[in-house]
Amino acid sequence: MALISQNVSRKAKRDDADEPSHLQKSGDVDEGKESELDSLRVKKRKKAQKEQDEKLVLEQEREMKTLENVLFGSLHSPILFGKDDEDESQNGFDKDSALCFVDRSANTALSVYEDGKELLEETEDEEEKKLRKPVWVDEEEEKARINIAKVNRLRKLRKEEDESLISGSEYVSRLRAQHAKLNPGTEWARLDSGIRGDRYSDDEASDEEIGAVLARGYKDVEAVDNLLRTNEDLVVKSRAKLLPGHLEYSALVDANAQEPSNATINSVQFHRNAQLLLTAGLDKRLKFFQIDGKRNTKIQSIFLEDFPVLKASFLPDGSQVIIAGRRKFFYAFDLVKAKVDKIGPLVGREEKSLESFEVSPDSSTIAFVGNEGYILLVSSKTKELIGTLKMNGTVRSLAFADDGKQLLSSGGDGQVYHWDLRTRTCLHKGVDEGCINGTSLCTSPDGTLFAAGSESGIVNVYNRDDFLGGKRKPLKTIENLTTRVNFMKFNNDAQVLAVCSHMKKDSLKLIHVPSFTVFSNWPPRNRHLSYPRCLDFSPGGGFMAVGNAAGKVLLYKLHHYEHA
Image (spheres, rainbow, N blue to C red):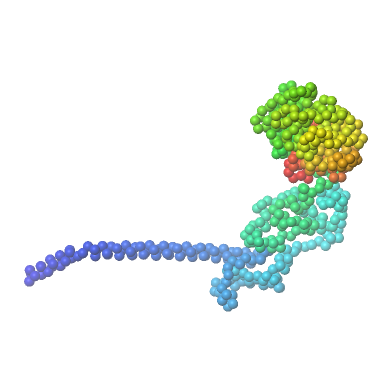
């Protein structure tokens, strides 16, 4: 028996030892699958928890917006945060809805839910108007009448030249508009831009929905959006007509304050970019300043040995500066290469002085005043003489017109000549009324007007087309100067004409061209101009520079023009 039991136990052990290996491996695989299932369950739980957290955050945000609208109200129709099911809208509130009700008016009921709100469309416009009404209105404003033409500081509120009496409410509106122009708001303080961007699409937003209320008297503003983004449309635009009588300006730091000249300034001119100003004079130096009205930093100074400068001018394209004096030659300064070239004497000519010249608007031709009535035409590219024109009398002044295709000249015979530069012929000549000896000419930027100054201080302003047609009568004769007219200049939009004489102190007048009247507050009483020699307006009209015999370049800001 003992042997039998031993054999049985040995057999059982062999059976256990001989168990197939694949059964053992299958057990391990089962254990691996169970671990993968556990990891998937954990991921699903985390994902579900994350979705639940996101839903909770969205619900909290919707609840906060709902509470804000309930507590503080809104000028705009509420936004639908979500849509309720039809069954819920018919049967009532669900379990999680907030039991809150806001009555904004007797005719309008607004129910506030956590998921959304609804507002009756037929009462929306009435609600908007009621919310936008001012709290208090002064009834006396409509009865009051204000004379804005009588007080000098109120003249800026006029829309028309002959406007005087306005109502009190209109007066308040214009004062607010003027304040908004002088004190523009900052971007972060503009409420309308954020509301419009968040709550309305471009197609749905209208003037009434945005809720902007135009000031009375300014209902012709094209778009509410432009009104809120800029302050230019709140009052008369800068493109409007300049009013006569009183010129709004302020004196700035002298343009050449960093390096004043110790001699007479004979030329000042702004570059086409309105930031660069050149000055030149008898100190034989050509200087460039960056004009900002505060520091006016000096950029460069060029010394021309034995060459007192009587005139310097940019080419209209801004590439070069032509510099002339009482010499047989002249200089050309290349702004790009920073190189000075000496030009002349001109071949075939015996002029001892090329001190007076004009540059054509297309930068192609330079016209010099020559001897015995000759006008010398020089190419701005080759700097060579390309032609001459001959007057009956001596030449004293030149001016280009029609984009450089025509040239005006005047001089000792008291006549104004019109030349066609394409054919080099005289188109027309006519007597300048009352003039014995012409000393100065200038044309408006569009070429419709030209002004002729004389030895006696008389300035005649003509319509160029009428003059060419045979009408010799000037539009206006200006008699505010008593000495020889040496210099004249129209500003960029031909609303201001500056006339000056070298012979008398403070002898610089600014003419309001539409009315042909002199600005009464110019020249300034508290700042002497000394003997004015030259003047220039910036391309945008915002700056005016005046060079004088004391070596200073006075700088002024004209407030009617926004851009330099």
